[in-house]
Length: 359
Image (tube, rainbow, N blue to C red; front, side):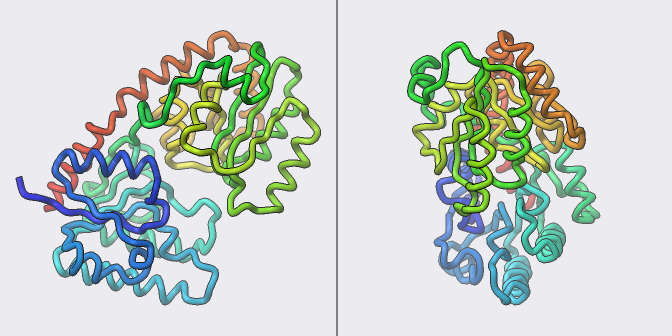
């Protein structure tokens, strides 16, 4: 079997990302040699790196934002430099694979550049990977892809055994100052407008029960003072809400996951959610919109799914969780069983098959 070398671009979002870590570790086990670039060479002049230093067979693109989200006037020039290099690399026989994690950058910055770039990358790619059938259909439509056979569905992998998972529920609650008998909802991760945290707080404020608590843990995106101030102002009205600001270290993920009964994803818009797989890997019931890949990964036996355009959807879902408080544990166990099917060994093999098919 010939040795295949792939380079993951761009560097931003790749470093320390658990998705990338697990994918790359498992790809190497199935005979794909991987290179992760240095930051300086990955978003502008990567051609010498790919051809001369790494002598790669493939460029595997993940998140495209770092190529064009820069607050200066060189966006168009940068876009052209990146595209020209990709065209040149393709003419040298180097294959391009793109895993589409989202249809646009989450803050919709430079939306026009984003759209143009995505359509061009879709055209240049030898293969495109999406994480579910719904995403495949959306990608085909959004980026006007004529050859639907070059779009492959490979699921997002789980996080079972990736994070430590030893702490008992009672201990975790004690450490976070949560009542043992309460139903605890959790929002975990980067706090960004598209994730709907403000809407979550407003909805929680309306729930009429003193036996519930909401934990919000994560870093405000770009440490925005404006978002932090609004958040603290909203939380001040409800003592049942606990806010733990700042980046959550890897070894503390288990603390928040094991302290809660259900994890909430109040997204306004979503294509793929690694967070859902994380919650499932910890055996947690979920509350989420039936949007993008979420409706394919979760089912009604393990989640309270609602329509994203139903303005009362989140309220109804949280009330349903309240009524089924004592079923949440079993819903979580169901999710854990589902998550076990998304093992990285299998996902790496599917990805390697796409590489070999392109050759």
